[in-house]
Image (cartoon, rainbow, N blue to C red; front, side):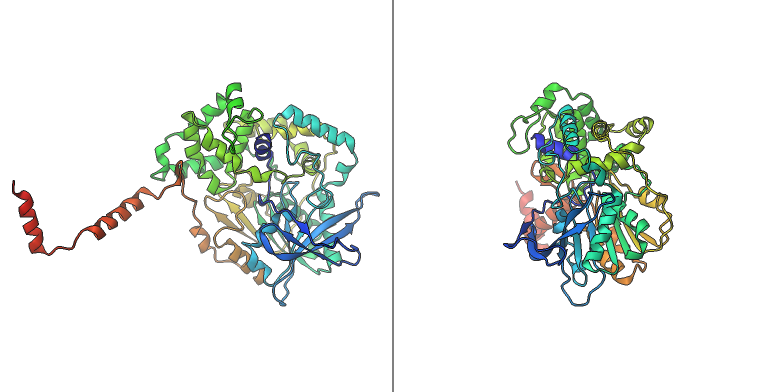
Length: 511
């Protein structure tokens, strides 16, 4: 249980929470200089991929590395520029995005899809400090282990920066012989893509950015965004005839978190066994589990019922939501995560900003505090980003109106330097919407047309999933249930002529 809760609590900006474990073919990688790929397969994708090991140089002497690169070759001979998919985090491996090939298979018809594991992630000499699979639930222990990891190799974090990631990506492009590329970025991957656009505009054709984290934004200040997402969920629940029966579950959540004590922490049930968890589940972890649930509308739809049940003393549904994120274990390389986050995000935060962001929210400082405390033991130098210069590449922005960490206003207010941008907003959407409804088709049209204006009408057809109504899942809306029941009654009623109806009523009237 400690792995499952902590993994959900420490989840940052994963572009897609999928676990694609890659297995190499019988033969290992050949010389990277020859660029002879081996065949490999990713979990959830049936076709073979081409796997490369590409050497890259560092910004400083002694920082050379080899990067694992996976390519899903185009299905047709009509080659368009390749699309590189950049993972979130910072700390997620792009090879973890292989399952996206299923919903994005149309993009793969005429273009290669390329997955580059940045140094320190996935198959590129992962730097996880032994914490990715089983981070301890106790913050003190987590911070102590993080400090031990830093002291064991204090030089390695210096090579793990966004600037280095962009330089490595450009070296991979050159090694693969791609003239121009397009980039898809998810969450933190959008920032990497935006920085690549600033530093290598001549190598880029277009951008697709989902869950936008602009260069100048402070996305670790996420409490207000999470609160807004929860309020939007509450409003949708109030408009639903089934969900509104749970009453003021939002206030119930505040009471649960405020009254969470030692007894609650030690008795919280394991989602897979129902028995008390291995380690206490503290309130900060529970608040983060709720925040993480808001990433996915299908999971968020469980929250009103689960919180209502928890207020009544039944914690199993809330525990079940935590169990949904067990797949996040191992998705973040913590050494890489803290190397980038401490230098480029936490170093910019002021105490007053953290307090203002936390005020009046269910999350409070539960998300940011583990990073503030961890970064105190991870002393990398602060790294400032350059001022963004205007760029004219076609850019497609994708946001969910109920995104708890990268809300639409980030894309609306902080990207004026992008002169040729379009913005798709999925109402009720959470974090990362590239696979929902007609969005994959719009992405394909955008990339193939060179960024021509899109007809966005189909985006309005993407709906929230139904709310969970009970222990056995969602329920049809009450109006629909009544309509169906009425139709069934009419089908079962015998068809009588008027004369027989009069006769039957006369018989029934007799004593």
